[in-house]
Image (cartoon, rainbow, N blue to C red; front, side):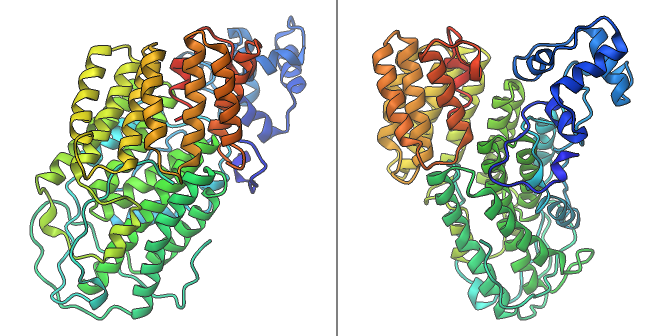
Length: 529
């Protein structure tokens, strides 16, 4: 498929399955209509028809689809079970497979790092319900039970840090040596594992781990400031490095207990990096690649027995489901994430936790806080899904409950407040209430930390949309101009596309870039933030 080619930052994702088909076979738009015309015989072979199928959402008639299916070797029965364009053969559509053992997780990471980066499919490829199914399985499986070493290496004796929180996400590190790492066999459930004799952990491995863990928050800040474009290749390279370290150990059997401590930390770092790479791909429009990274990240979070990390991965998957027009699935994923955090707060599976370094907590790139804050933000994400479904009452109840947790809490960070306000604004836009949305968007701008330049630009876009929906065209133009200045130097195609659609609407060019609709706030709520 075309995703096997090397991708440069200048290449655009292929936004429609037909564009993938054409890229794979070297077809032009004219080639497509000529193929159909030869088989149908009564079709005028104008290239504009194929262009509209890709860019205008026009669905070709059944006879045309059958002609294309015959050319592509697709059974005609599939056209009814998988309506256009789902039946087009564009590669693996089961991208949400999640591995649940450490050994399988290493294999999944190995199949993702270095290859998902080159997947140019700019649309969700996993079947409807697959993300929700993965979330439910994650929730059903107890965290892996890791053995507690009789003695812990000095570098790993710091007390456990607070659980990482759900906030918006933001070159490889040279290693002195390559050190084999033992990957434990799967142990599920809360049963205690006897202490095992500790073998010394090579200092070089601990130093490399600390360096990798320290890189994650820096990459998050870079993504928040510059957008996903500059970060996705870097995160993928770091993930490849961590995966190689994990793969060098005998994954089929547990090793000495002290060596399993860095193995667990490596899984946690792999999960953080895969989630970051997925968010960066989502920001750049590489939807299929994002799915692959999120799947690997959820697997790594389970292998690391890190429920808060798994919940953050599911939060990102929920947002992608919303963007793909799957609000029911987004709701199910967010609910599963909250349920997992509730079990974490209740202490389910914590008896197996081993001591970690303070750098491991820092690797999450989150400010200090509690699982309660993470759950509140997931509650706000659920509210957004209800808003898209038009369920205003449920949406408002969830927003109020989340706000009651986050707003009065002195430990709630500026990131948390900004994320909550952004979710509330998206809810109001989706419900068609632009004045209320603008109130929350102003609060979002006030709370956003200076380093989150990409989100600031997206918020300005949404303020312009809210102004336009209220009939304030002059104010909308001024805000759009501010957004244009704010987005300079930021490589976030998601925000750039939203700004382009806004300008098209402002200048009265319906149909281009998806703009021109009377009430676009609902769609903008899923794109700019």
